[in-house]
Every structure is written in structure tokens, then in C-alpha cells.
Length: 184
Image (cartoon, rainbow, N blue to C red; front, side, top):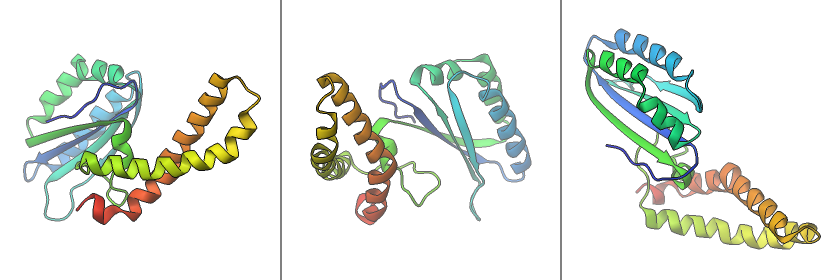
């Protein structure tokens, strides 16, 4: 199972492995080994491990590449194929989810791993409710300061400011506030 849209943006991959009972140490050793190899690939931006919660045997790791092309290089590599083959010895089941672009704005802020995304119609509504007032605010504050610049330059700066504010401030706050509705 995988979801991937074609964007030249970062890609976050969430892999969950159900580990056979009694083989937890093998899984942990494997995770550190595969991480050491993956970090040497172009575009690798980090990996995080989550041990299973009590009563579960599902180990999760989340890794990120800066582009779908770099992720593809990793996924097609003989090194990865070797590590995937090694994991078969202790793995009962594997699920893989890939997220790019706006989907990462809607990661559940209270969960270390968000595999389920809200329905797209809810993402559209929330994005509009954040973007519209932000455009109005930036138009009245930032746009006058950029008026002397060429239109393309001022548009680029305006866009960068908007995306940064939405990604690092507005969307995390709004998705946290609307969590019950978004993930109902």
C-alpha cells in the first residue's frame, strides 16, 4: 500500500512492521543497520524509530527524502533490496505510506506517526480558511513594502512568506485546534 503524488517536494515515508514475537532485538538491530545505509543516499533527510506501544508488535519508522527521485534511487538500490530481504526473517506484515506536499500539513499533531489523513474535502476547507485571511493580512502588510520590486520578485517573496507561515505556524495550530473534526 502506498500513496504518492508527483511533486518535486520532499517525501515522507512511514513504514510499519509487525515483528514476530521474540524477535524484537533482531528488528531493532536491523533498523539501525538499514538507517546507517539509507543516510548515505543522496537526498536522505533523516529517520525516526518508534517502538511499539504496550500490547503491540508494530514497529514504525519514518524517513524523509528531499524528492521523489532521490527516494526512487533508494528504493531501487541493491542495498535496500538486501536490507528488505533480511527483514523477512522477523517480519509478519509490512505497511508503507508515502506523503508529499499538502498532506504533511495535516499530520495529526498529537501522534508521532500519522498514517491516516483526513478526507480531502476537509483539507480543502481548512486550507482555504487559513489561506484566505493570511492572503488578506499579507496583502495589507507585506505587499506595500514590496511594491517597488518587479512584480515577479514581489510575488515570489509574498509566496515564500505565505508558505512559510502556513507550514510552520498557521497549519500546525489550526490542525491541532480542529483535530476532533479533522480526524473524526
